[in-house]
Image 1 (cartoon, rainbow, N blue to C red):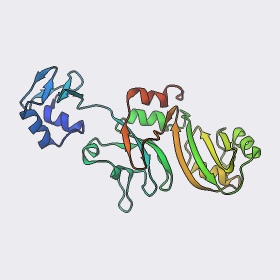
Image 2 (cartoon, rainbow, N blue to C red; image 1 turned 90 degrees about the vertical axis):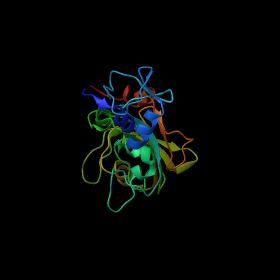
Image 3 (cartoon, one colour; image 1 turned 30 degrees about the vertical axis):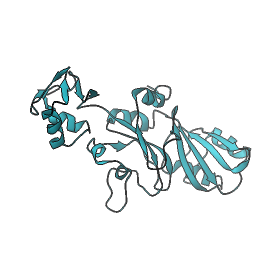
Image 4 (tube, rainbow, N blue to C red; image 1 turned 120 degrees about the vertical axis):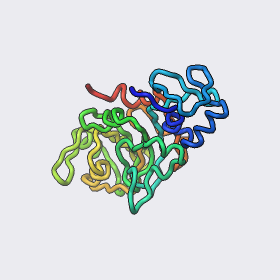
Length: 242
């Protein structure tokens, strides 16, 4: 790994702009391996040293992960000339991290969406070969029944002839139009197409879990929180095949 300027390392960590980082350094609020550094142009190896701002550990080359409770009306993309994207929901300092969504949710689909700058992790979660489980809550037209459960467990065939992997449907005992579906792949509009193949078109769809990571109910639509490495393990450890 090459050496990086200290002010750039702080900026890359999403804590401040380059000019703000220089002010932090000049004011004596930044330390490297426990020693206060006052020169913004000091060169460091971010993978070999500990950088702290006001005593808080940061890393100029850190991998970051965020859980977003995606609201309706935002497209899952890093940029779009016509539509608002999920990144528009983030404050300026986090936009500097060059985050991108892990997989996608339709514009009108809500719920759990992971944002990260870790490409390797994104590949693990989205690769069709990995079979990460994804749990969706939905409301549909028409009453769900045991025939739907059986069809999904066998692997429902879509109207275009493609077949989905076996999935698990749970029907709300009090409302047969309300259910939960666990799938293990990510085909285009998959949940909507699966239910449409059973003549049960979806009119509300929300992702509530990926692997064993569950959407934090304290997050209102549009809110987000940073995830820990342990949170990330809830997604990949028991759901990724080699």
